[in-house]
Length: 108
Image 1 (cartoon, rainbow, N blue to C red):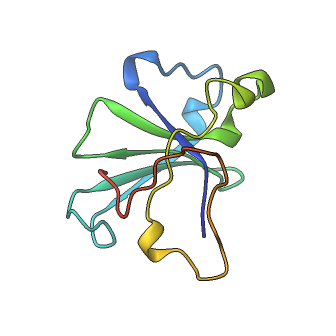
Image 2 (image 1 turned 180 degrees about the vertical axis):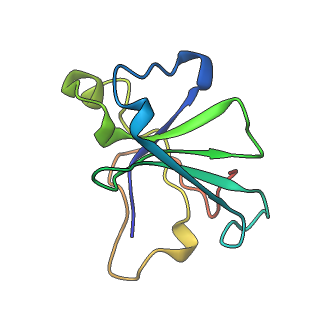
Image 3 (image 1 turned 60 degrees about the horizontal axis):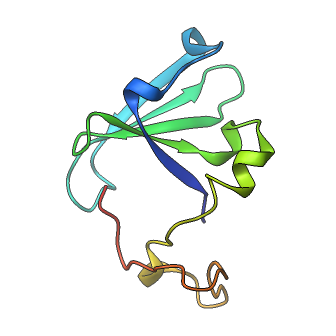
């Protein structure tokens, strides 16, 4: 239903271990822009690690949960905007951070 992500330049993405365990799947049927989205997930446990859009080939969209540093969660990885609010379920009010920008759709 929802997830917390952050974007990073591919040049700054460093795999400490497990890159050889990633499987990749690409499709464009569920992406509103028609761009292809490639999912990279762990072939052992199935966890989605990051995504890459053909619209932004130099960037990766990582799941915040893939970062082990909780100090980063509270600082640099704090949400900067909320997106897809037009398709939010009616019982969810969204992220409650004062002044947090909200977007109807996504740029990806």
